[in-house]
Amino acid sequence: MEDYNKIIESLSVRFSQAKNIHILQPLTIENYYDVENTILIVNKGEVRFGKDKEVVKDNEVLFIPGGKMVPISYGSGSPISLSNDDFISDKEKYFKQYEFNEDHPDLENFSFVNFGAKVFDSVNFFASLDIPAFTIRGNTKINSLIIEIIKENDSVLPGKERVVKINTEYLAVELIRYILDNGLFVEQLATNSTYFKDPRLIDIFAYIKENLGQDLSNKILANVANVSEDYVGQYFKMLTGINPQDYIEYQRMEMAVDLLRTSKKSIREIGKEVGYKDTAYFCRRFKMMFGIPAGKMRRRESLMNV
Image (cartoon, rainbow, N blue to C red; front, side):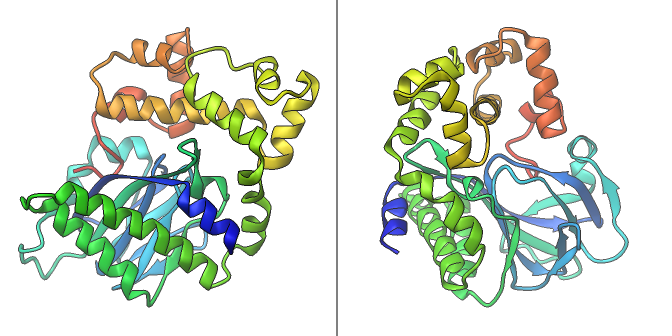
């Protein structure tokens, strides 16, 4: 447990957005994906997710780790099936944002929070554990934190940003506690949390984060970790389960998403900034990873922005 205390202390949590959503028409997004973590509570109706279409009902919570692609259905009844791309093009047909004081008793609805959580400000914590999306039932603390974050974020009270930040950090900690208390994903936790203790790997993570636009070949990483070029790929994969170049591409694409959402830089400039000299290649890789063109990602803050 002490190891997890150290991880939590090193955790950097960043609030992204929080909203209430009315479901105007049942739909299934076949390849839901977001680089940030998504946690939602069903207020009325149902949400289904995964290959087995597990049902999340009233007052139950669904958590989807950032970087996990998962099919997800909103609303009861027979849904229309869409890709990310199709949904984003016509999302106003299916979702409508609402305030807590609005009264629409006939519409199914849910509330959600998007947030990032990084260890040592470098590694996406929940994604790194390689855990699947899962349901949380009967946890009033997590439920109330989601609602409080949304209410505070929608308010005009002084200091609301600080309160939202604190509650989002609290929410991330409660999620970790829930996983540990319920003995979830024991094998994944045992396997994938060990590398947080390796100082050479942490140096590699930090170097990658600071140099995403530069050469990040295995030769460069070997010098950072003070191991041989032949060994660094094996060493990285042994501890993380993925090869370093795949990890680097994910980090580059995550940074590209952030720049698309928060800056007015051109797609060419963003591609170059995250290490792609060839804009066409960057766009192909982006579409392959997220299922939508970079230009459409730019027109939203997240998949559920309405």
